[in-house]
Length: 114
Length: 113
Image 1 (tube, rainbow over the protein chains, first blue to last red):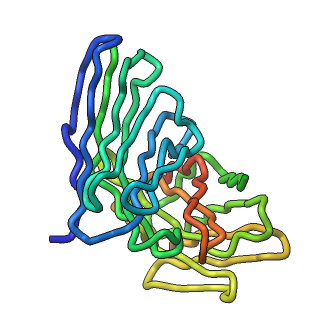
Image 2 (image 1 turned 180 degrees about the vertical axis):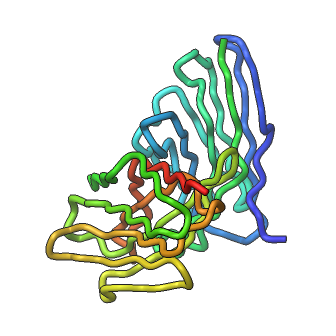
């Protein structure tokens, strides 16, 4: 089944403790992206990747890192999480680097930083 | 960059009635406009999209219309059903050669049985 898989689905952590949210897609998509969703703010892009070893900042990249060593994986790294990073995170992928092929979203990761 | 706004933020409709959500965008170069539906606790899913060379597109009970001159596009849901209750996000992109999809903040649609 074609899908974008995120792990974990739920995560509670403490301020300053490094964490990684994994994202993997099995559709051979070139384009991958991370969004955070907060009430009243919609979906805001954190980072995106056009292809392996190519990443770029989105609208809210501060406090996040990403890597794209393989085509299928695009992990989101929070080196020193803070409470304002408590949010619902979605990974998304698209066939190529063009947004007009539609995004496939993962199931989301609800992160709480205390 | 592109700025996408959605109105109204919340819409309540009686089952069987029609619902219309409108989005405006700022960048006249945008030419791809998708709509995503997010049910409670689930991921956003693409339900319909339109490109700038088309004024209207339909898929069963949903349709999208585009007015490039006024820079707005709308989602129309006819004969609403309880399963249409969700948050709907519109988005805009410059399409070919561009990788950024700018989302609106979302509309909560509530269908009252």
